[in-house]
View 1 (spheres, rainbow, N blue to C red):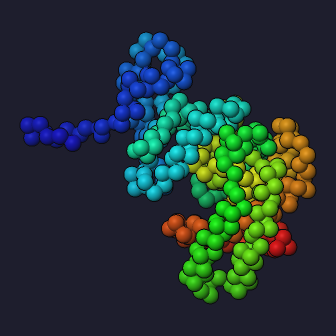
View 2: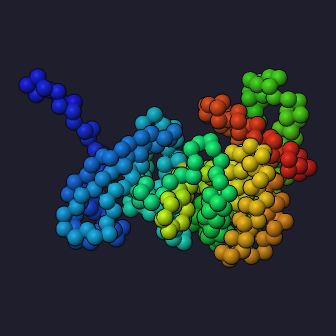
View 3: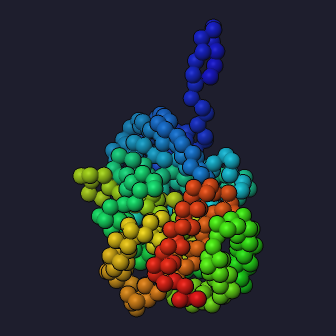
Length: 362
């Protein structure tokens, strides 16, 4: 805001350098999204904060030949409050878009036009395809999806998992393996969080649930053997709730796209399915959709080239993943995510553990 002759004039905040016309011109040309033309003007259409990032929707105007070039873009940068504490997430997401996404089948994720992470300053940014006009999220949180929406989402998730299933680059050029010692250290940290969590809840955490947690901690090394087999593993999203998927709007012939990749990792694929269904859906909705979606997921894996992974193996992995997810509300509590989220997650996943007989795995 500036004052001239007693008149107050509103001015737009200074755009970051990566949103300047010259930078965008160079980035779009390098990405093959702009030929002879150039970006002439950039306008902020909308901006918002998520839990960990700041997102600006940019409107672009060109001079010269620009047919087919994007008229809008999303610029994703760190959230000012978490720029240092959650820096690994930014690095991780930039790695995904710049290293993994170009080697995936088309139509699974938004196109990335530029992504950079500066190790010295820990600053980072992503310039992403804007799907606002063609796609939308399935529902307003926390409403579950319709059957058709759920099938479309699980189709994209299965195609994503199939693309990296037992990929020869896993742990080498794609992600890193977690060693058995690192798994043990991870559970030692969890056990400390759990003790404080249980103390906080007092009689709100039943003796039956306390026993379940202690048994999981005690037998975690055996449960981790599934991961350490390094067989039938893939790149998991890590935060695959339905609101991280964009579905085509009515009348748009396109595929469902996934987004938000700051938690991707090598893992058992069913971790994503269990997080989506057992953690997020109350029993009635989960019981209506769960079996059909697991069947459809398995069929889509097979149709996309996965071999030697039986429907029974999927069920076993899914139940194991549901059991593992009782740890999630504790981790969420430990990083100050509000009870509105972790308490409901705790109740839902415990009901799924009971429904699916997951305690038998211990």
